[in-house]
Image (cartoon, rainbow, N blue to C red):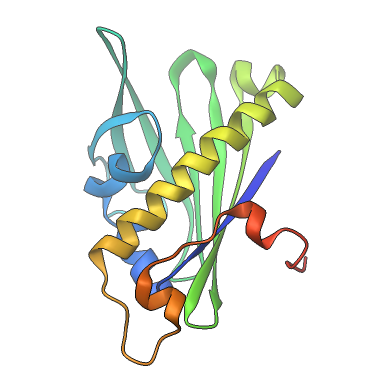
Length: 171
């Protein structure tokens, strides 16, 4: 299981606006070339989006389904990647002063990836999450100006990566 966190220098509503826009998925999900709405009204439970990934000259297609939706606190997804199987990706969105702490928890759920889950895969996911959460922070901070009266870090859009908060998070 790969768990990683990112402090984003904006309020939870700003984070939720980016997460709830299916067209923005490719802006912050590492490896995704483009995305577009699928079934239902994203991000309601059961709704989906379709995404493409480019591997050289090949374009692969996958889809993601919302399994839990409790705005602006929780978003849990099941990403379907064809023969690799599916993964559970959970976002825990916590107010942190005038900023937001986003905790992502991902693990293989079904198919080959679930059966072959190991420490190497978890290490890969940690690297991927570092990039993904950094891109999410950039998208949120670029799109949402800091509110008046916010902290200096929130006004300046200085997100803090996982290593900077290590040891300061409770369960």
